[in-house]
Length: 589
Image (tube, rainbow, N blue to C red; front, side, top):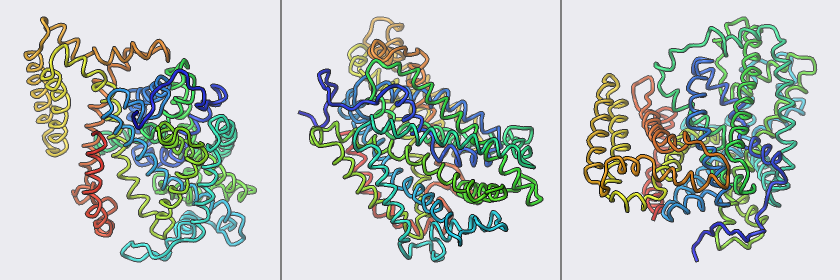
């Protein structure tokens, strides 16, 4: 018997959402989180306003939705989590599922601290000493309070090393993990009911913020920067990392590559219309982001009006945006402190359902193992909640935000890598044995190298020789033509036409034919994207992001946050790189 159980038609103990609406609320609740409210608007402000929509929408249509459908559809079909799904293709591909779950769990350890900080801010808003009660509140004072009093960075030394644990954040972290545990410990039916509130109420609050924001003086200036003629289209070429940021935002926003959506798919009946469900979830999520952008930018416009500056001079991004801009704007309204409390409550609810959905991905995978299959669900959930709480204490120090920001930067690359491996598994590794039987191993491997070897060479030339773009295209074409020709010449089939069909389409169309009768309509375009577009593009974006440079023309990768932070954390990779490399190499054995 293997470590992971497979699909069993006779199994009746697997939990299920109460109905499709509950599944929608849970999946949309997972997708909609902090990233929609502060990361998406921050990226839009950083990358030219509406110009950011171009890579964002392209990433949604050609990468996000296909991967979302892949995860939900395969989770439904195999009725198991990420490890079981990709292990069904080949047992060595279980490492893909393990990577995704680890990636999600690491993210959850710091995402939970974000929620804890918001809980902290919400509770502090009832204190008379909180700055939000002051009529003289400005953005600098608001964000200074957040960094110094909420995060606790006022004791941080110049070397950026942690000097203490912030007791309040330990307590709020415990509260966050308890709520996360309680939300999923007793099955998806209860979790689905909880999301009616944790997702439904923030939608109501979002529209309240939107309608109030657009009526404020100066709001039109902010909206004009968001979608008007002040957008800067030149960032698409001047800042090539915008493309990588757009894709990782889609991954964060849709909750793909964490194991979450595969787990949620496995908790629905096998014959659910997976493609329709994927479209509903993706469109709902991006609509929320788009509307949140209006609420945020109208607030930016009003703050610029109050301060007598141009809206483009307001430089509040990420944490500054939520804890600097909105509290100031809301504080100017009648009953402003209550608006601020609603803001923090809104963020808490958005964060919680995203948090317990990520934990669901871990619990589902562990419950699919032969070791824990018969263990009560609540015990498995409790074990990983306790472990997650202990790991999250790293971010409860006064250097917690430094750690969080640094690890979050590198998690982006893990998301791209997991997405690449997921689509490679479905588009290339699925039934590779059948391809080898028909055309031969040498032909199959040469064709794979033609695709990925050419892309790797081209990416190195594009982003290594930044002033010589054509060298990359020449290298790509040469490698592709040479090794595709070699693959055809080494074929075992009688005709070239048959060999081309086997190499280009056979295995991915066989996957489509297998899952379509069960999960419903599966577009041919999806097959082409997961084999001939998405993995190649993700490889390019990975290299693009890793080769990004700072203003001093030095690579950001490996020294993110500046030289001071680089030197402070430099001992960490030295001590762990060998262990991590050994672990990663054994995932696929």
